[in-house]
Image (cartoon, rainbow, N blue to C red):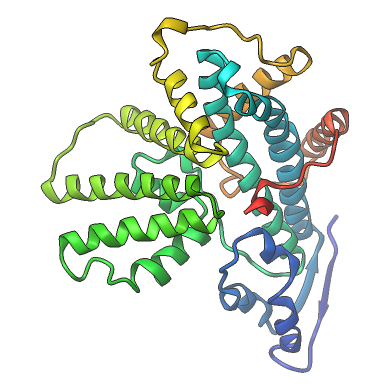
Length: 335
């Protein structure tokens, strides 16, 4: 049985005076540095203040599920292998380099979307509706669609305050291409002062320009959706090499091993993978890939309180306690 508590406030906007403080509330720290709080705080302007236990369970589950399943059971377990492989890329085999690329893509996605979902859940506990920040980006069929699904608050800000301010697509084809390149390069530098981030942004800018050129010419290289999805996922993975590498030397070595340019020293062993983390790593990687491409995202799931769901959350919580180790902050805090 659920309980409902209703209170009639004296004013139509009962907690309007709290908005300035709430606009700097901690959930916004998880979304992006540029976030229009006026859209989310409209949900506070209600004539009734209602506390419904059935509704409270949804944000609680959203927050717990994101931290337990996405952060601790997938992203952090993948990081235990990705970090040493990238640090010692010169000693890694070709297979390990490929695994590191794919695993980092999964680690970044589940870490980033995990903190965003947690922020949404925390906001809902205060009756604040934050927008969706990740919408199954690896299911995108193009780089343009990827940026419509990945880190939506950041891509929206880049579009509204950089791309459009530079002129957008209003001043001819070549100016549009220039604006795309500048916007993405600046967006890359926002993540850090390293030129590797600028190169990552420029890489995506070039891909966006190529896609726009093909659309204008009405050219289509790939017809099947499955091929478009794989091609987009591969290109995004290549981009993450720029993003993750600490320097240009690591980028060069990583690319050599990915594209098999070191033909005289091709190796396919898994010696560099720590033995005690190997099974957990492959389990997390496989589960992450299955969830990414076959499962619904957290915004598409309709949670209903039940004994079965409670038991599943209990199992997730127990697994997290088993694998919980050293402190592991969200990756977003590094940028």
